[in-house]
Length: 207
Ligand code: ADP
Figure: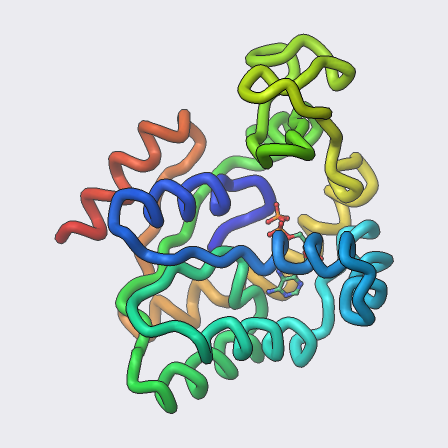
């Protein structure tokens, strides 16, 4: 867990590769539903564009379907994001007999978040994320990895970021205490480069 653009998706991918665990991002799940034009996708699209969370029941249903097919371990990225979601997940995992091992909280200062969000573009073909001014010079550039088209996410705007931070403070931040009480929370300073952050994540997971 962590604020928007705290690096959850990047770290989830790195954990998935190193520890051979399947990772799921509820944000990516919703974007796929939107692209496919499903009922859920249509309902979510307006909310995510504005930076608001989608209803708990909707997202929990998607996660439940995903978990039902899982045999081994997994990494959840972007779920739970509210206390009711955390309670629903606890109940689901208790049913499956697979309780959470750990919850990582990616701690990133707001200035870093805002710089990352307002200057990032993603490739429509390979999904990689790049920073404008660093790996690419403008959002009109092509993907340095595969030549694909780069786009900005619909919710990576100043207005949506403001709303996403408000939603985060009001609904997600209370999860820090929720998981602290359960002895599951590991706080990791995540303002640095992905490899540096992953070093700390891997140390924690290997312990
Ligand atoms: P980020 O963490 O960078 O804000 P995500 O890709 O994780 O972005 O999520 C994008 C959007 O999808 C969120 O702003 C929210 O609208 C929606 N979303 C993702 N996961 C959840 C969730 N667990 N509960 C409610 N809404 C969610």
